[in-house]
Image 1 (cartoon, rainbow, N blue to C red):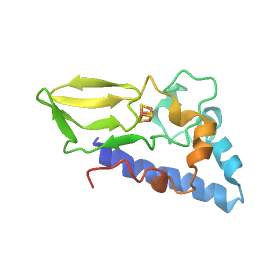
Image 2 (cartoon, protein in one colour):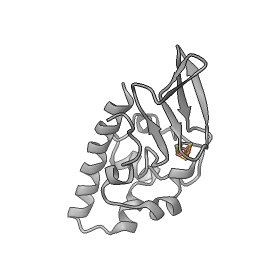
Image 3 (tube, rainbow, N blue to C red):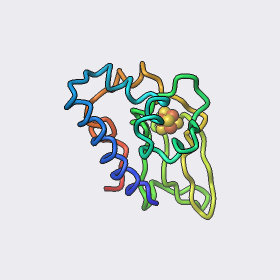
Image 4 (cartoon, rainbow, N blue to C red):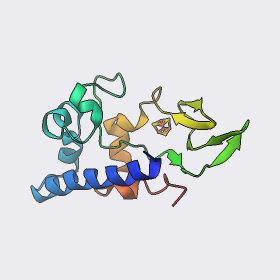
Length: 141
Ligand code: SF4
């Protein structure tokens, strides 16, 4: 799957859940709370493939999934730039995390970073429209 197809598929899934919560009159705090890992596993099993294994992407006690992905993530399936003959497909705008290289491409690896999964960060950048929060991510179009 390309970054682009994941991004827009995920945007639709996210919107469907948020629209449902807004229709029930939920406010910002209640919407964020709904996206906590334990609740999502129970009520939104199709949102993330890891939910079926009850597995977290990050080893955090309070993991919130509202911002999967992350507004600092940048990608272009055609390549952002090149390094040592490898095409760089993604990067972090604030240089957290690290990288994974294989088969001539370099991906950004967010697994050492928990920034977007903390409620305090989510509240800082909150918008009911996930695509608006992520508007800088897709540099490919
Ligand atoms: S490394 Fe952290 S801050 Fe950077 S894109 Fe990944 S999750 Fe976001």
